[in-house]
Amino acid sequence: MFEISGKDILSTEFSSVIDFIAESKLIDLLLPHIPQSLQKFTDVHFSFVTPSESQTFNNLYRQIDKPTDVLSFEIQEETLLGELYISEDEIRANASYFNNNPEKECIMIIVHGMLHLLGYDHSDTMFAIQDKITAQLWNDYQTNYRAGQSR
Image (tube, rainbow, N blue to C red):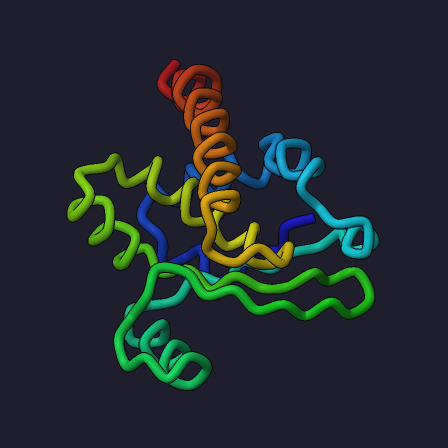
């Protein structure tokens, strides 16, 4: 389902979050929100990028000349739904700015990007779905995944 590239540039902390996401129930939680027309797509590619690369892509595709936390690209070819370009440094900056846990922010940003791939635009509906799924995943991460790693 998830193809991951650039993981070697991630911190151990974020690498652990990505491992959790790859093994998590994210797709099960998203399933009720996946339009019928997109259910045939079974793959998503995550690319982890530096702030410089994020800025380049953001400028090229959105004409915003600054780095960003996540960029979503709908591909919808064969089995590939799309790609997420994710910057750990930008996620950490957001977490600090919003006084949020960086690991939770990472989970939220991935959910956010996935919802964009499913056709959602920023709206109260999108943010409600995002918050609900993030809370469920964060609880599971803290309770089961991270707790299991410390044993």
